[in-house]
Image (cartoon, rainbow, N blue to C red; front, side, top):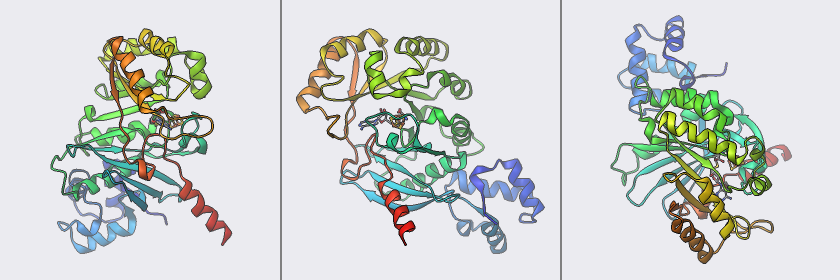
Length: 359
Ligand code: SAH
Ligand code: SF4
C-alpha cells in the first residue's frame, strides 16, 4: 500500500486514522507529532525521540512526511541552491530554489505545477506544457524541505524565511491546492508563518486574486506584466487574451482599494521588443504611482529573443524613474545553475526519463 502523506491530511483526519490503526494511544500524541513536524521541522519519525520506538516504527510503516524526494541539487557561486525533486506519488519532477540575499535573508522560490500551460514564449517552463498540478501536500513538502536546508545553514541567523510562488507553474491556475497549502503554512495550528512573507506571482489570472485575498488578505501579489500594450503583450503571453490590459488595471485598482493590497509589477526586458520610449510611456500611463516595478532583464538569449545590454537596461530604468515610477532591478541569482527566473526546465528529468525508456 502507498504510504499516506502526512502533510496532505488535516489534524482531524489523522486523529481518526491513527486511532483506528491503534498507532497512538492518546490524542495528545498526535499534537506532539504535528508540533515536531510543523513547528520544529523534524522530517523523520526516527528523530521524534519523545515517542516510543514502536510508535515511531508504526508511523513510518503507514505514513511519509514529505511528498517529495531530493533527486539532485546544484549550488551556485552566489550561494543559491536549486533542487530537483521527485514527487513520491508518480515520479514526476519539479524544481525549487533556495535564495539568500547579501544579508543572508532567505527566500524559497516554490513551484505550484509540473510545467505550465500558459505558454509565455520567453519562459522555459512554458515550453513543457502542463503535466499536472501539485497537491497541497507537495507544495508544503517543498517548503518544509527548504526550511530544513535553512535550519542547517550556519550563515543564517534569522529564523524567518520568505516564500515566493515564482517557481514552475502558474499558481492561480492551481488555486485550490495553493490555498490549502497556504492555509497550513500560515495557520497557527500548523507552521503559522505571517502572510506578509508570502508573494504569489501571476501571469495575469487577475479574476482569481480576490478569492485568495478573501482568505489571506495580507498576502502579496506580483503581476508579470511585461508589456502594458495589449497587442504587444499578446505576442509573447497567450494568457493576455484572458484579460485586456485595461481590464486588468480596473480589477487591480478595485482590489487595491478594497484590500489595501500593494501590487508589484514584474517586467521581463527583451531587447528590441518592450524597452523603447513608447513602452516606457505606456507603462507610465498604466501604472498607479505607488506600484513597484521590478525589471527583470531576459535571462537568456536565443535567435528569437535577446537579453538587453547594460546600457539598454539602465536607459529604460532611467526613463521610468524620470516619469516618477518606483523601479527596482532584479539581479540574477543562480545564473550559473539555471536557477534564475524562467529557467526552471526539466531537461535533466526529461533525459533521465528517456534513459529509463531506452534501457
Ligand atoms: N507563472 C507565474 C510565476 C512563475 S514565473 C508568473 O508568470 O508570474 C516567475 C517570473 O519569471 C515571472 O515574472 C516571469 O515573467 C519571469 N520569467 C519567465 N521567464 C523569464 C526569462 N526567460 N527571463 C526573465 N524572467 C522570466
Ligand atoms: Fe507559466 Fe509563468 Fe512561465 Fe508564463 S512565465 S509560462 S505563466 S511559469
